[in-house]
Image 1 (cartoon, helix red, strand yellow):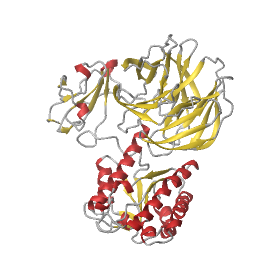
Image 2: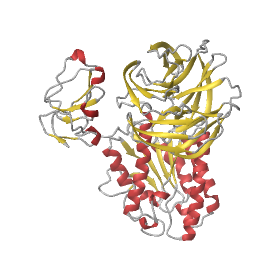
Image 3: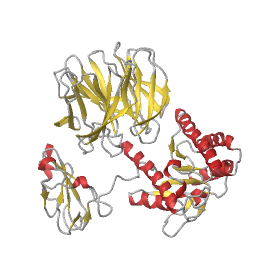
Image 4: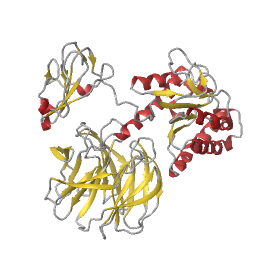
Length: 559
């Protein structure tokens, strides 16, 4: 829909026409496209010229007047608070900016590889569509490299795509290119020439592994996306392609356990041989599919910074509850440390099912709910649309009841939540690497033999853009945080002890809104609840939350 100039009329996504639990958007001024169907509500339409509201009722003052034709004002009527937004850079709503996922200002991105990166058969290759997609979504990307080529529709033609290059030749040049252009993000698609030209294809995975190490030795802070190579329209060559590609995920996982920020990108399965212009080079459609795969990978990564328990879509961390006695499930919609509303979710009568975490497993920007059945070993994900249940997806069963899910967070830098496990009998710890709701691999973390130590949640306490692990010793009252770099353990930091063993750490999230995770607590003896405001790993203050005297209620997320 389009809003006409001079009006501030927008249909809001309202449940049953009620405003009490909704977040409605008003837009004033010139024509503004509304892209999301979720913003349409047939029951309620508001009209106003501009945001003219009592400043005493606002969290931030609303500006008014014709000079601010794209001013957005938000109403969260569940707490009767008017919140005014900021000027949009252009007309229309857009998805969140890629500035966060592409670090730097501007965000320097190096497309690195051979003729497929350069654009053989199609000028610009995948870079044209990728660039235009990034720009359309608000990215401040700056393609960098010593090469420059592409069509007029590609505004930024820089790259490091070298036709005919083997992996070793890229390695020979990278010592000059990385220090000179200083990319924050590298898109590496290399190996096609080694495989097609039969240049020791069996040794190609080892050369790729060495190249990855070389890149991080030159620029340790880089985020490196490593792609499989496209299929070949020749059965013998394609078998070598399959063998080479099969080794890449293991190489990437090995680097992640070393703390390197490497992400695997499956390009092979994005194309078929029908998308090739010759034996190995894509045609225009094939390049477009490669661009889409790069873009989707970056888009998913951009969601990683969103609150993983924001069920109301207001940017606040909410709290998921489950009653093990009557099967009820609810969400506390939070405004910082204050509860603003309670929303009922579908009940689950089987008391063996426990909600054990929240995370966005389907990449729609909304948290889903992770479940484990402590009797059968079944595991499941509820896909959610805010507080509305959509569907359930089964995960692999883990029959040993001593293995318990301890949380969900992105441990391998791909923007997709992984699942953290602890064995309550052996002290073993593990992470399931996930591709959405699909299990990919398990990675072992170091064991903690003292079974008094239990995992209380995950959060980025040291601000290195990867989750850390919160621990509580249920026998001594000691508390600690494991600082992590992906799957690599860095160090353990003690936080203040809590001698009352009735208090259990129930999760972590940025409830105070300062960009730093806080610690959520529940007293399993009294029903009291509290929030520790943290400054990294430093305790600031304790804030009381509303008590829940019925001890059958347990916090299921965020974890």
